[in-house]
Image 1 (cartoon, rainbow, N blue to C red):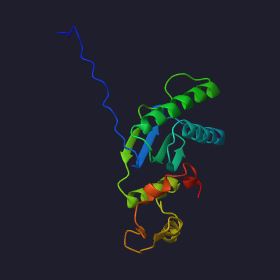
Image 2: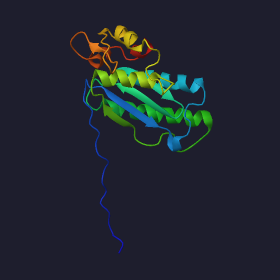
Image 3: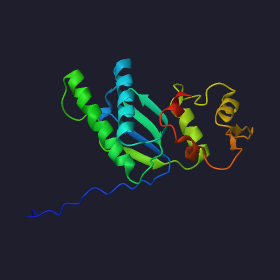
Length: 185
């Protein structure tokens, strides 16, 4: 028996809250390469900067891989991530199709986002995403002391090797005031 009518179910609404840090990621359609050369990476970074002019979205860290992206953002307003990402991915897809003469989906689908669970999560996420060598994501042996110093943290050589806050507040709350500069430090 074939139903004569269908109930249309909308996609669930995405809730994001101002002042909270989120790990945002998206993958290229069919896991294909989206960034083919350094000009593609630079063009995407310029689009991030233009998106910042439309909706201020403090960007804590980012990693652009050949077929996917990772961002750590702290929205200033509830629901800002959805509007910011919609503009960024739509605009990027238009530029991509224009440059490469293609059609269809560039990105696999809706982006994913997860709340950052605390400073330890943020530092681990930023370290792994900046690493090319996944076997040694924290890089050189002095990573803990360098990370602690650059983020004004007190180094504690605990077994997990993560720094401890030396003042009140969280890194994410304090780093969001200057959108892209935090990633260039």
